[in-house]
Length: 315
Image (cartoon, rainbow, N blue to C red; front, side, top):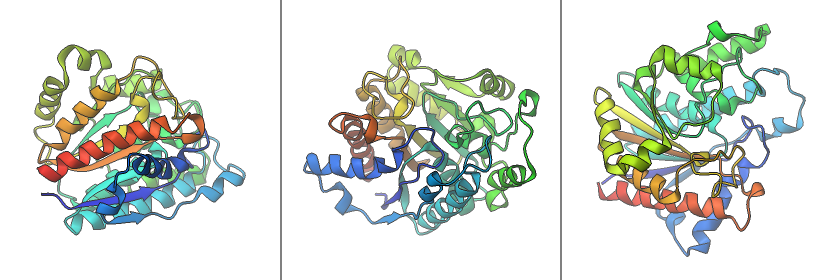
């Protein structure tokens, strides 16, 4: 039986749309509405955030608020690393997806010799860099920091010295770079990405499993396929961005995309992964209640979170 620890990260400085920092509390409210004592069951740690930067001028247009993102990486990685070293299974509930870069760094800092696999359930690849980004929003870059990729071949921006230095620090946090090999990443329900990201997926042969693959084959077959693909990995991290769900139900997130997963499909698939002994950390991210009606997105996220943790507890 695993000892669960909740790590709450209400940081949204990596997002382009405001409100994801409220996602953690929205999920807690969903738990109360369902009369669940989920958030009383487990020890939790709330990470201090840098959301005050949202009110300050942007210094780096191609990596907005990168100094704050680096600070968040440092805080999150410390919390995740200490949790794992203390024999806890970290369940991270975070605002925007840039925070996942800190989570991955924390896993590697706790287990520097581990070969880490990443299951990235997301409509987006999050493989942009400050050299290629169309928006400058850092929630589109965490996987690039994890695989330590600049994508210079598709470079369209020149970085100032400070941005360059901070980007290098993000990639090498914990003095481990890369944290993950591209061949140990699986992108699930990917359907909205740019040519720059497509180049990296093809260059590194990153595994992609579409919504259609899941619908055709079912959760059990996809689960087996992914675990077999990552069989060389000693540890596996699962990151679930709620925009992997179809836009008809994922209105309460900053970047909804059509042709996504149904709630039950996501729930079944994540629950399968949680049964596996190699899974070492789970993150749920990008719930934005300001874009939602009746807290629906947070309720769906909570259902998935609660079922996943229940499965963890039984294994």
